[in-house]
Length: 255
Image (cartoon, rainbow, N blue to C red; front, side, top):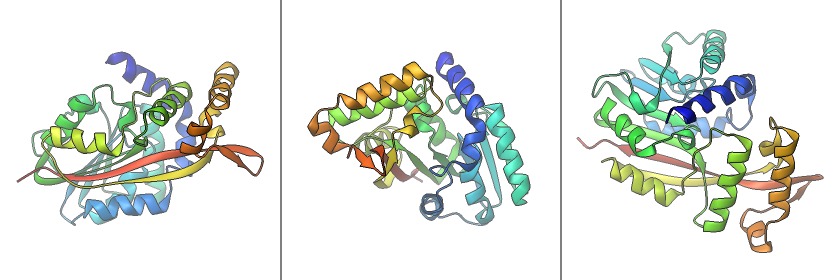
């Protein structure tokens, strides 16, 4: 497991500045939907796992008493602390930590959020068990993450593209897999929704070396006509674009 976490620290340490202003990570409509599904209350204590540059933690913070924002990568936490200071957020505390070994007592939180991080978890079942443990009974979890459609070819292609883009990538899961995994961790699933964003291929090639970028272009260039349709591969304004799938899930630890 350690090699995956080490890779994440390395990748996100190098790319930390990008995530402060990344359009896909700062998208207001998605952050608003996370808050809506979270149903936060003023007295709540919240844990935001894989906080990155802190966007989700800062979106939830005005609605609750305290947010503990956790991430593996010190550089990301530095950017998140700076962003929180600029926004005057005084009820957010940033800590370094690993989702597989949460350093919190049982039932310590009313809400756990996790946005765009779960596809990096080396052991997703262990991670969900830990999230369930630190939630009080009746507490909520909201997860927003990269996903895949229920098509084996598209699933394999998107996961391969993300491995090439980011060596710390483990797996993106379909909506159906999320339902099964959350239920397996003893959550009551309230909703699972998917959405897509049609993004330029540079979303995969930015930040990688020339050989890897060439491999990404070759992979997409070799897609079958069926796979190109499934992922809506086409040129937009002179740039090749491909669909990115996302899933947003809300669940409750039974009382």
